[in-house]
Length: 335
Length: 218
Image (cartoon, rainbow over all chains, first blue to last red; front, side, top):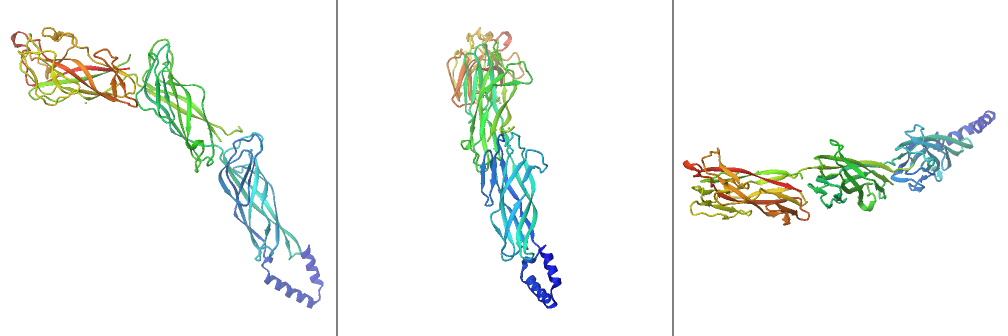
């Protein structure tokens, strides 16, 4: 409207005044680069980083400030830091304050909009003012929060876009002007842990004999030491060096204590070729964790697993048949 | 009780003898496999066969026998029977006791052939504890050597508990040991099965061999 009024006034002005105004406008145009059309370039989008959300039973909040400092409320773990968003504003009036407001966003796995979303509830822009050239770089952060409804967040890249509106005083039109820009937002959730079975728990080669009354046992420590107990005529003879189980956790948050809980119940090791033959009983699974149970600087943790293998009691003394005896045990690993 | 038997060969000879080998909570429950391999028998690894080296024995007699004892350490001494009629001498050569090993860290027993009940002439030939060494080719007219009274010694990686019923030996592996090696020696006697017509009265140059069985069990 201001620009239209200016044009009407210009039509009514005497020729000399029109000439002077033309000269003034020309001079203005040549002396102020702010008359160029404002432009916004997204130098880098806001990445909140790679995070884990171990528990969504209540709302958790993660803030990544424009200075790059993370603040966590609730169950969020930083696995690797993100990077602030960066916008380059050019063609704005000189030395003008720019107010930014932005739409909220819902980051979803793959940007598909499928729950559970991470709701971007605020942004951190700080004060923005153009320089003598009419430009300024805007660095910003943001805050998202989880749904807190107990739903599970899949491990994925979470994406969305948001419209940012930049409001500033434009002396050319003697009014406030607004320009907008769609910006990209993302975060990666990696709550799951990379688990690699480096070495299976193997009790080596054994000679074993059951009896009706006694049970022989072999205890293998996580460090690989063995202890045998052969009461009565029950026998467990170790014919080759047993190996403890070794599991590597990788890609976890650095310097973070993990919870590692082996199965507490018995596991039967059976000979698939002879299902009715005597079996072994694996119990008292025990773990030894590297670095006191904390991941190292690279987010790695080694878990060594031992346990006690016991012969069963049978009605008659029986020598275990040759062959491989196998069973499956569970280890629960979490932040 | 399951056992695994190993046959050791024994050799002797006249003149030059040969040598006998991972809801709301992020807990990941991951499954892992645990296993064990069962070997229902114990394996004896033969390191060396028993070799009496080169022996001198010209004749055999139904009335007298001569003998030598090869200790597990590999040294000869005079055997339980001596004779001035027949002579059995060691001429050296590749003398070595039988050597074997068992891979285990548990107490086990080595079962050896029963000892010879009677070593005297006239009975030793038919004794259940005797193992015969015959000349290559098995000529029945050539005198044999009679071997028995096997003994275990020179244990490495374990010790004799003394609980074995002789000649069997119970061996307790040393703490941390996963294998025990041992030597076996024996007595060797001349033949007392000489008969009319020069049968089995004389020895011939050649390689004499036979087989004896040792069993390892838990």
